Length: 604
Image 1 (cartoon, rainbow, N blue to C red):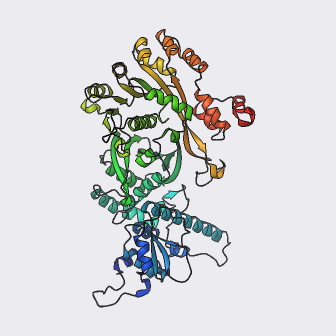
Image 2 (cartoon, rainbow, N blue to C red):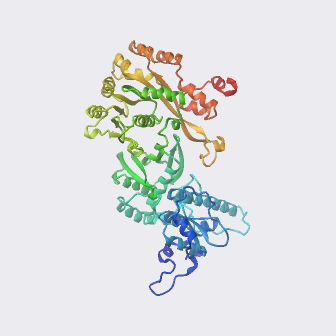
């Protein structure tokens, strides 16, 4: 056992459960006796708790290394100073691990079952907090403020500042330390990287750290932290002098880690990511694309990864898109998207038609695909068969790429991915879909003349076609279709409606937008949609057929009650959902007088 009672990895390998006899006949010390009474058995048989709200035990954090706690999913909880120590355990926590904790703490242990993901998050938070306290103590010692002189460092977290600096939970935090001295990284990474290459085909469980090399555990923890914080992308970006690890959250990039440029650690991370995505690890001068998947514990939760590498001036950069079905499932309702009830009612009137073209427009990252997925979910649910399972309609999609598997949400939807190498383009895929007896067709994006014409013809022959366009507002979609070569009279006949949208960040209510650690001091947490719906009626069709301009079409729609993106943004400002600066950043300059006129007191 290491000094101070902390568990070393060598010691863990030697300790046996209570009552086991060693080969030499020596009996194991009963210090860490595990309770097996009725109450303990009842606790272990109970359903796991999904939230760890109890305060972590300071004694546990002092004695048990982070790597051990994370690997075995065990965390001490505050309890009585006498009697058994409370331990939060996961579904994979072994009795041997509980026993070893008892040996280190010199107390019996009472286990309480918790959800694996919630427990892993709690362990990360607990040791991050312990690392911050340790940094404060070190700073006080350096300033001569310590009451008893320099405070000896504990073996819980190693200071890796020579390799890693800054980021969430600054200091020696558990996300990258692993309880290993930084001087060992450079000598051990080459050996462990070779071992990680041989483990590329094993189960990619982010919560299971047993038997994994240090760099493998590091990448797992970076991905786990990104998923836990709701990030959509992870960026590994080399710049002059350092390598940035950044998360895109709520549409904005946040730098959470900094690695030394050219260090073996940064190179090992990029190589490990390539191994996960089955890319060529030796190719560093050409872009590569790949896919992978990771799981979270025994819950079966799977997160798909889209990996892209690109050579840059200071080295190879990597971007990982996180496609989390659980996050997607929460947005399969229009209320969750932020769509106002009245606009939702008018939008669903268009979506409920048997034929026509319904477009979602906006820039990249504005939530267009999510809106279409939600629309397909509503169509499937509203046309559910009365006597048989599934939907009465045949729904097919052609996408680039397939972002979420809709079948996991219980939808009877067939999804096809574009593959230009095999001749499966949007146009070719759409032609083949029309031979599959479809009722509803979703086209990921109308990019070219051929796709636009086939989509319009499909809507005119009795199919409901959903697709996306890149335009600034709803009225501009008409001009875009005409520019793609579709005749105005065909656009007028086929187009049913256009939904323009943006995503704006919402104020973090707990800190009232002032900024806190939970929102990374940005003042924002989460996003909501801003929508503009152009319903094509006879008057709008007449303007389209006569090739009138987009501003004229928009003016007529506004005169008939259409709410523009700017007006919808002003409404959110007036309600205190977001700020004027945020709406201006995403949409356009907002007139402060218009905002004031929308506030409740002004209406009164």
